[in-house]
Image (cartoon, rainbow, N blue to C red; front, side, top):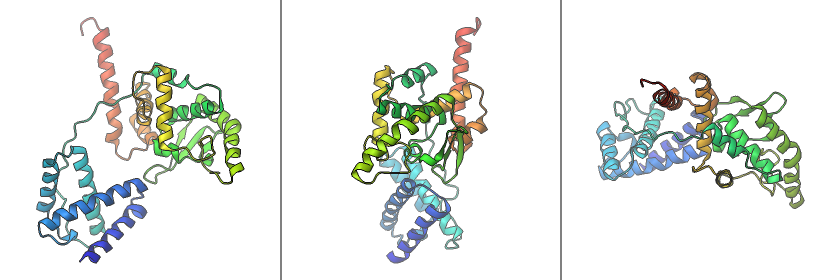
Length: 304
């Protein structure tokens, strides 16, 4: 029985990797969620994952809610279960999906955090002319110019940048490649970093033997920059710029989308640039723009 379930879980993991093209982090999250559901089923004397009913799934979601889990966490766990049974149906193992007609808990949307254009200008004016400063400016300019996710920036390679044509090629978190233009300031910052600074970082590592030849952004020792380092960079420059907000890579990504829409970009284009599979994710930024228009109207119209 355990072997039976293990075989299907291995098949599910292959499905997530090779068919759905999910990132390593996403696959790990899906695979962590399922054993909890398996243990819950065992408590109900359901000894096989493929033997669960719609009632079992609904009872599991109710227990998660009673245990105090947020709607977002419950939704994520339900998404993992849905994906598993979809895999089983597509593979011909099951005929019916026990997650059919089960509604996801409603998530109260958080207000989207983003920077004003003036705050972005202050942030981008903060790095100095040192080697580290030149690299950091290229990172900040690229984040704001492209709306890349932090993982996409981390794993960007030197070959992904085309300075002559002015674009970056991004493989994305779901295996979908997209081409994102680079504005003039971002191109100038990247050009200085790539031709003047990056080779010096590489030589530091070569002297010790090794290094990462492909990585676009390197630390002082010639190694690919880490997620923690990126967060520290943003924290440091937000403090230096006097921006009274906790700036994260996501906030810069939000700022990219909001400013594009506020300046006339259509939703479809922003969706493609952001790499959103679901247009609903992009429409959330439109609501920010609408709220701003209403605020302008309320403050400017004499009979608002």
